[in-house]
Length: 332
Image (cartoon, rainbow, N blue to C red; front, side, top):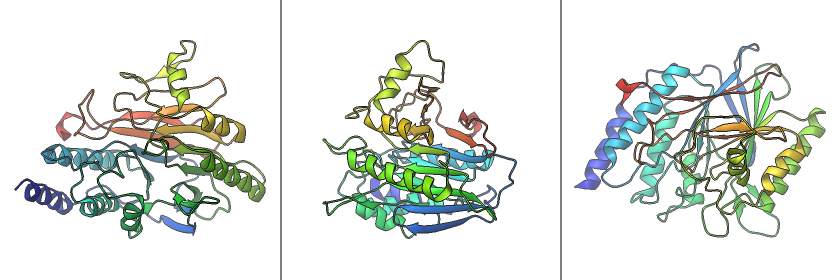
């Protein structure tokens, strides 16, 4: 009976019509397994906007009412802000997923219904419950809107689910921004961005500079925060925006990815999820902004009303804009 109720709830949500205006003239191109282009029909004097959502955790038994509210509120945020792209920074699925393929297909159908590119990176819970990375990727590759890529790792048969997206304006040759998605891991011994992934990032960054003659402004998205997020919060001399209600769970990160981002001099901001009750951001002394997402899943213990992160990526050299956003109480 419980599983029938869950399936019925998901079906009703899929039948709920979309009222947000679709992003017009957007094109997604897969250049390689780990390289995409998003071409926007976009005014050159206004920022590219992204909506980051994180830690939705749908599919927990007896939480279908909360899950309906989660997706209703995300839909409302899209209606309110009409972002060019959506970024899902992990835990889109839950470790308790009894029907992994059904839940992945439902999540894909929901985000596809928003009619704009959505970038996805794995969280630590997404791959639990017997439905892993390759299976999720197989489902999401059937989407016309989802962006999830991977690259080969030297001397290993496995692939790492990291990728880069060139965001371009229609009619222009080079990208305005690059967006890196990283799989920050889930299993013990792999709960961080590892050396082979850092080597891939450096190679892509250096290749971009060779092709375009300069570094392209970049942002990074992953699930598990970096060690420097805790150092940022603990440094009273650095101004922060937002709140911290729990210790930073950087798991196995040793600070290496941060140093690579600083070394390449292209990354301006990193965005993560994982910690449900942190939503702060601030600029480190090396000039890199570290930002949490804003909890989006109603199935979690609520520290504040759920919402998302609105990111404005300017086209003329101005600083990136970051804002915690949520629907009002009537959207509960």
